[in-house]
Length: 65
Image (cartoon, rainbow, N blue to C red):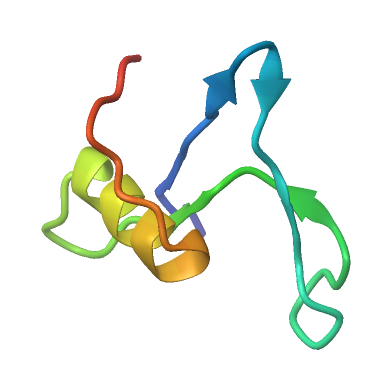
């Protein structure tokens, strides 16, 4: 099964944003970039904005590929 995901690599002042998963979820305590599954009929860019807001409370104002 294929799952489409969108991730963001946030870099600022030679630092990269990653987060550690909770101990109570799948793949506990693993490190990950912000992002997640793309919902049906959702653009990857919109999925990234939604996931960043939901997961870490940040608003994506600009992105590049």
